[in-house]
Image (cartoon, rainbow, N blue to C red; front, side):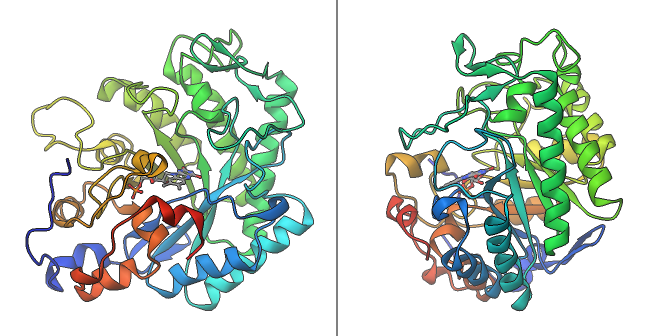
Length: 383
Ligand SMILES: Cc1cc2nc3c(=O)[nH]c(=O)nc-3n(C[C@H](O)[C@H](O)[C@H](O)COP(=O)(O)O)c2cc1C
């Protein structure tokens, strides 16, 4: 049950100030704190984002979304995707499609970055489709004790890092305002972080989280070299994995610092800290921490800008979307209080923006009655 029922008319203009403050990180200047969360939609025929995809993102840009993060789009590695509707971020046709996307978003004053993805050993739960090439991951495992695909060689690791870096320089060349690396939810980068799926005995494995973070750190460093010092790089991370919602990489703030500080030192400017419910404290109460969430701790421990996410404005969490559950609108008070305290800098909104391109405009105007329920039917179309 969501703790913030819509019990009163919460949206007065003054009350919303913290949500509509501009924000700046390096060359990225945002008009407000609202980010469209990256959401896979499977509408890219042959891996190419078409006019329908460009129009979908443009509608969010037209309606006050501060920063749009694209659906996961895969880098140039065999078997990087696990569904034929996922877009490529390589090859002339796909990059032309992405050029149209960013041009349309810019034409209406929006800002956007692609989310770069490699699924590692994770199979889609929505299709039987499998890539022609063998799947690859740190130790040839999908989950602890569950083998799938092959263990990456040194060459595969080097080529993967090069593929992410190439995607970043292509994004910059096409005009995107930033890029995000998908390091969360049990996919490739997270398979390196997680001891349950990383049994390597070379320099990309080890008993400590710091050692298992080396792959991500080298990837970020290489991307930084590709885009130069002023271009913002966002890194998305999570403790939870789709293989195990209860899994945690860092049980204490000290362990979290060991994980995150090297990634920020490697060149990540913004940490996008994925939770399913943004209001949940990251650690059991510690004196003076005011129940900080993951993004709150990440900001406190690293000094980097952070994005929080998870059930903003909706009653149920997003995994319910895949089992047909509906969610109803809820108030934003707790979110706004956390932004006012500067616990984190930006807030990503997923399903509320997937189903309603006008969500931000309605919030800004105080139109609480115009806010819609989220139903799983929304996943079937690009509104
Ligand atoms: C349909 C759908 C697709 C998603 N695809 C991605 C994805 O490609 N990359 C990613 O990092 N997260 C993905 N997510 C997670 C969202 O970015 C977000 O973290 C999650 O939906 C929680 O936000 P919400 O409660 O506001 O929906 C997806 C979520 C949904 C509902």
